[in-house]
Length: 129
Image 1 (cartoon, rainbow, N blue to C red):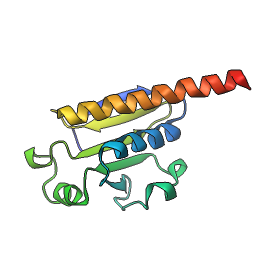
Image 2: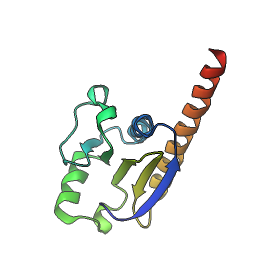
Image 3: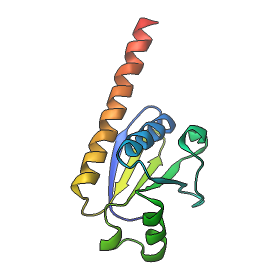
Image 4: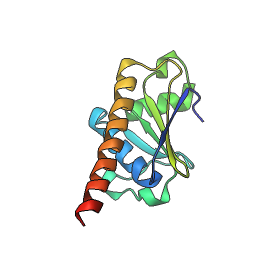
């Protein structure tokens, strides 16, 4: 939808992964705007989002960045201000700019770490049970 680079991350629970990835982005972009990627509608505050019902999320760095994307689309002025998350059957796809900024690369690393930590936590809990 936004063009750019697709980073495909295998995962067992893509709807859980989209939630974890959203939290990872929110730690960096505290003023972000989260939208339903299928409808373009702004989503409620994080703690009210029903991730089980979503397969695509757009996270803009700010509300102003979201408006700029609506007006201009992908261009130098919007570079580094939007992340698209897509939950597949067994993958989470993170879409960033063709030429991601260092901040975007760092956010993708944070998403990978969050998913990896969740994987280890899940396995540890299963063994303990």
